[in-house]
Image 1: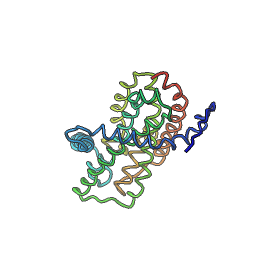
Image 2: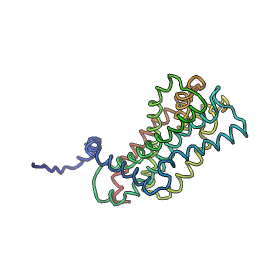
Image 3: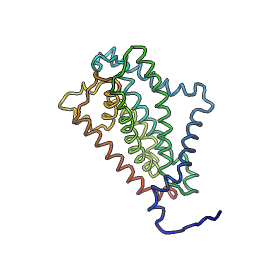
Length: 274
């Protein structure tokens, strides 16, 4: 078997997206490696992916539901309303944490071998999605416990999962590129995520936000993701504020486009900087 090696200026730029497909095996290997590393030699293993959102849900339910006595959405149990928001938030938070450090964690690979660098943060997002799938098991258990059954809207959940993917990828690519150039971002990202948890409608319903501030509140891209998940999981008990949802969704799309553009513009210097 003979091989043809073509050296041509600008070829990698023109065939970038084709190269992502050609290097798909590397994508699988990196994702599978991250999954194995995360759970190898751990005491509770995959249970950690369940305990984190579950314990957070319990705390939020007690603080916001029992002590602050904030209303749930319709007749939905407060615990289910909170956990329906914890799923996309945990996926988004884990994706940003893993993706922002992914290039630095693969420094030797980046500096020695050519491949589309976007594969690295993308594989981190997939790894976080595995945690999301594991955590979803608890949602089913909670719904059985409360005997609360979803409606036909649950069929739309893949659409809102894709929005969560877009939000995680867009912001993840942007923060990944910034973290390579400015190492301070490894300390800034955890603060952003901690702050974002409390300004996002995770522990409470976004319907409690006064009407005159709903559109402004929807500038948070996670509003569309969380409200969409609740609309799909809670059925008729949940309503979507369409103007705010549309604005938040538009911001997610804008971040995705900007994240890809910014990452592509800066990745040619990653090997030199890193």
